[in-house]
Amino acid sequence: MMRSHFICLIVVSMMIMLLDMPSQSYAASEPVCTYRNSEDETIFIKYLPLLKRGQDYVDFGKDGKCLKRAICTDTFKTIVEDCSTQKITCNNKDRHTGVFPACCIKCH
Image (cartoon, rainbow, N blue to C red; front, side, top):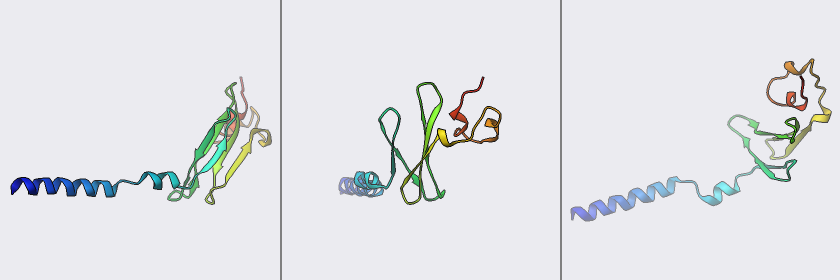
């Protein structure tokens, strides 16, 4: 009798743990943005609703300078900012916080 209660308790505990785990299909269906980087890889970027901001991805070239930055919006569209459109110089580089766009140039 005691053994059957113990087995029943284990089975119920396992069922509760399985119900609490997110399913694979739910995790895979979570909306994300995509970006194709300079090495032809697909990068997945999330929007973080609790923070009300999207993740970003900085695409670095082989020389160590960055080329572009991709940002995921709240509508799950990818915004791409190109280094060529940034007005960054070695003189004003320190005025920018974060990696991008300061990584667009190399200063000695």
